[in-house]
Length: 290
Image (cartoon, rainbow, N blue to C red; front, side, top):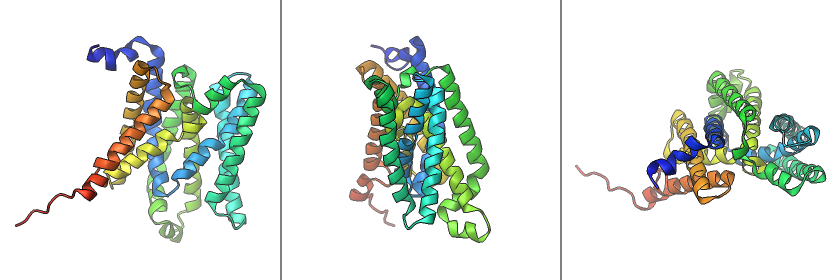
């Protein structure tokens, strides 16, 4: 096969491959920077918990629509994710539980409830679609919704970028100057939920956080500048989507897991060869002598 047959023909010949690639690019643009902020705030696992929290809302949307309607499931997932975020924050402030403990409790409940709701009405195939996504089945309305969420995310980050950075690095100073840190914390959680809803439609609830946290981890290994980290995370997510789709097409693998595995391979390469990786630690460069 020629280079064209390997890297370009699948997207030139099939519309579903083009839509899947555009969805991956949009998810990278929105989820990559959000993942960087979550990692800086040491909330990486909270993103995974939130990805499972959208499941009961998506399941209720599935029941109401009577089919795998991405719009109904997306709206249901948004409501469920925001509800879990608000309830977890409320519980952590009114009890002795920390926020991560309350998130874990609500996410386990949400995951079990969502699987139960889908299994009561749907088939095993429907449950697999909800859990693992159907990125090759992305249609034009779903693509518009993903693009709209990405646009809202980028616009919101542009507006709240400076206070959000301050809230990540020095929340005490932000409180001292009356910066309303909890407001920006909630806005960040809102953006997390929005991007998880977009990723859920493509990758399912079990892997929705993959294009959010793996590229962010790669970016942290390669850079210490926040703008550079956001750019690297976005590029890593986009490259993972492109290579994952190409590999899944030629090897006849499931597309969603292949995309996440590709991002994991990039992460493994970065662990070894990035400036903060193991190779630099165990094989340091000799210092220049005058």
